[in-house]
Length: 593
Ligand code: 649
Image (tube, rainbow, N blue to C red; front, side, top):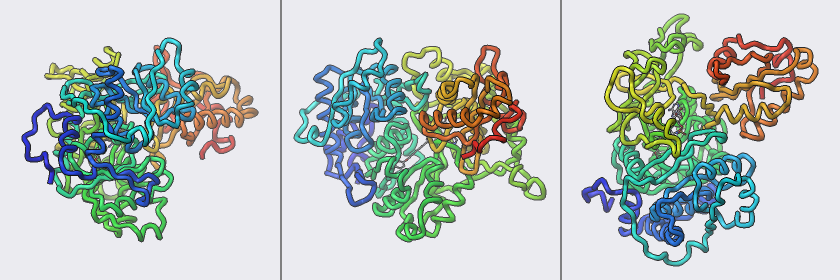
């Protein structure tokens, strides 16, 4: 039984207090970490363990007088991460979730987070101890180098000194860096109130179940892994089985096997994770799976594809997977996490829409027969369910800032207690993003999500993106970062634009580049330029462009102030009207894969 469920909650119940109450109750497993990605090496921690280990961290931070200061979490996914997170909370400091700075890409991103968040301390694994000088060299002189706090199993041994548990829920709890490019990081300030509100909104959707067991492999530095799984499990008081994202990616089977082994009832993954399972799990592996315990499977963070869901159902339906359990959902770190989701237990809803009308912002059902039924003319848009309890979505024309009439696509604006307070140190951007007002004099302020969609019968459908974010295999890539790599890849590349187009396996990255030279020169050295571009993008961002388009100087549409118009470039590319150098990509060694 949930030992605090019967007690009247007050609004001052922040997560640190909830953990404390759970730790004082009977010793129940809070987290089970599958150290090698399988059930062979499961390590269990009770709420009491988490509380004690967090106390150890808190004591160290309090000794350094870090209340109200920022602390970067640079640990690997796992139990130490969770202890450190709650330890930072307990010390009244602000956690900056991150990852170990190892590898070129991670170091660059990590350094940009450290520069922007100016932490006093970085918590890392002891094995990084000899390597901090190398990292410090990456920091500009203007930044005071933070102190490091190294932890390992031995660090957590023994009882922790008792420290008070803070209950100031309007204080900042977390600085979330999901958003923003490496060159221009944006830290979202979340209070304890935001974190709790997000949990409550999700619980309103999920309902209460006494035998709930969760499973996650999501990175704990991403909003969905942190606010969506770890915090939600502590808030709700049910056990969570965890494995590292790397173990999942190496072998997606481990996710579904963990669900089978631990009789998991609730799990979550982006669309690509479902595809990975369908395409990689062998028939022999399939035989070992029992997904019949699953009652809630969240799918969000990138477009939810009808095709993906159909294939997943066909493959795993015979192993007990029931599609009613699938919950398409939508959210973003600027709203802590959760904005909408399918109500538990209701059937999946997909609208067959006229694709051309949709591209022009009009929601019109596709006809069922004849040429209208051709796949190219129909968009299957999966409903992301109803808006979170206590929240409101307004669909707004991004140009006129007027709410759109019913049946029209517009930008999704959100308000409610999940909406964060803003970006650290960016008052103007904060006002424009978090305190937008509609032009009709409507009351209140809204978060501008930069996402496009529509409301139909009270359900939210996501159809595209106004912001230039490129999401590939669940990773948010910022076009500016990719474009920087492309421009630096070869001296003959001038302007460029990075964007994504729908491919067979989800979104694919396309790079359009202006070549400083003639078509003839490009024919002669094109392969070398192409190789340089592909190698640079792959090395810097871990994603291989599916296509590289070369055009003459001036080919890429720009704004009058000289900014790349990525959406216009993408549209021209898709229509085939983007200026090309005569002997460009098509004639060259295949740019595709
Ligand atoms: C989105 C987060 C949505 C995100 C997740 C609820 C164990 C198992 C399950 C469990 C607990 C324990 O991507 C998450 C809500 C999870 C409950 C799990 O319960 N945040 S982000 O800031 O990194 O990116 C936001 C952007 O991603 C895109 C949009 O562009 C958004 O602005 N996005 C979507 N695009 C299309 N369709 C969707 N459904 C999208 N969701 C996010």
